[in-house]
Length: 89
Image (tube, rainbow, N blue to C red; front, side, top):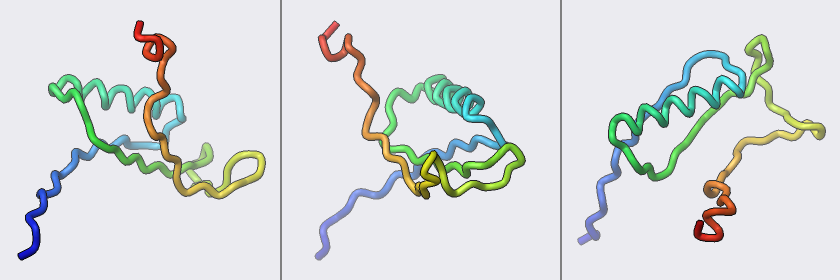
């Protein structure tokens, strides 16, 4: 008999609509987190954010930086620790 597996929990979709600058996107992400906290959510496990990089006219871009590199994925392992956290302050 196969071992019992935990049922996968369905995640919560957060949709940020429209063509936005990165500054506006940052503000919208902060607003989304504020909304989660207002719902009493204090922790989250894993998050996926899919973006379509575009120019000012909304045309998709696929190569970035001075070397015009194709980048498909950015991975952030965790938040940057503050000096206070590192020293227990």
